[in-house]
Length: 312
Image (cartoon, rainbow, N blue to C red; front, side, top):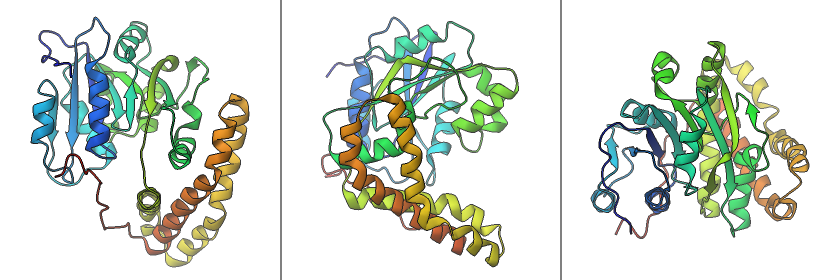
């Protein structure tokens, strides 16, 4: 393994890596960052939530990176905010453990930000080969950012591959202080006259190794968490009325994916193989949304993150 020394002097880029899956995925992401080919000076920040224990071995393996501990469980948006608050670079980039940045990822971000855009995102390609279930999650979450993508202005960037001028983020801190949502931040920047840009040159590879039970739980709990906030604010009759379309949601999700896939004209066979998994995952999310709306309560149980190599 290449040993990376802590950055000295002015830092060009702070990379915030959010752990969504487990430490095995994080290891793969950080190892890719150690092999970045760049003339810039960058740091890596890993904000940690309470569910990640036994990190001493990890910190010893990556002594140059900054592990930020937070009391209590944090959502992905809150972890991003914590990471940005710790950033020291003039730019900050966001990604997640399920991503493998390309070797030129850091340099491409630095080059792109030499121009005027305040926010620049890139593509989320699929690491191959992979299993149909992992393709299912990819198509549901990242199809819009699968190459080819058009270069130009946008408001939609992926939290797996987005970068910002840090000074611009500090100017709108109220928009992300309690949790960094890419769409909210981008909309706020654009409303103030800032440019949000999408570049096909900036690439990460998504790899999310999942078992079916884990994948279904993830979709269900996320769907329930999102919809419970809406349900809690409604009277019972309105909750039930809002929940009635939930059984149709899996079919609607698939119907919305098809035109995007046809425009891109690639990965059709992988999509067909992944279609049963897409239906199952979308169904789990719909079930979570149904329960969240009708009860007004999120799922409170936590799912264990399987880490056989790191948690012994």
